[in-house]
Image (tube, rainbow, N blue to C red; front, side, top):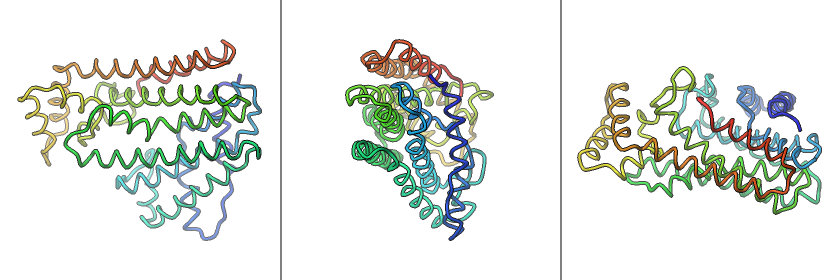
Length: 324
């Protein structure tokens, strides 16, 4: 079995080789630019890994893996416009370097390029793989829409939040693994189980991200600790706190959320203290573990050699035992 690091490096090499037309320059330069910003290339590497686990030819899975990476970066390009984000991976975002219209149109072309790459699979697999890709793409858009709606709402339920992160984040992991498994020769049952493994793992990963945002080591987390608190982002921790707080705590939380001007450290400290009193970190960690357990249940049911399952277990453990 090929190591994940090798597959990530392979994808990075293949991304660098992607050729786009030079004219019109303002349409294609932003695509080359966002793809050059790097990243972990985790999603396409998982597609290759799934193919490899079932004994498939990794080379036959490179184009669909690239499709997943191009699609992922298309969503980032459009997300940055919606969030009015100035930076992506420490570099200026496409809409800031060019403009919003360029970002929208270049993103549209990236989506089409993703489909062109995804279509480079065997004809017998084309329809089922495009079905998975379509379901995944629609799910990501639904998740982004829900995320934006939650920003405007006073109350969001835990179940709603879990469904939103499943759509926005986890379905891409599940979809990538399912596509890779089918290319590798898995039957539909095992491909579905691997997809379930990926989805539940993705939810657990996002819940851990919520926890790290508040309780992570700023030296290791790689971004501002407390960023979600500062921006009033409705994470698992905030939703749980609002649902279990007494009247005074609700009043204090609402007061901090409503404030337009504040000291960042003061706000993060005050809200973290409320979280600590309500034990929301423990609730979040329990929820995270329950989704990790569901991922491992799906993995146990897959018809793969034990050594291959152990490889996936170690991958999942590595993903969930992290500080950044």
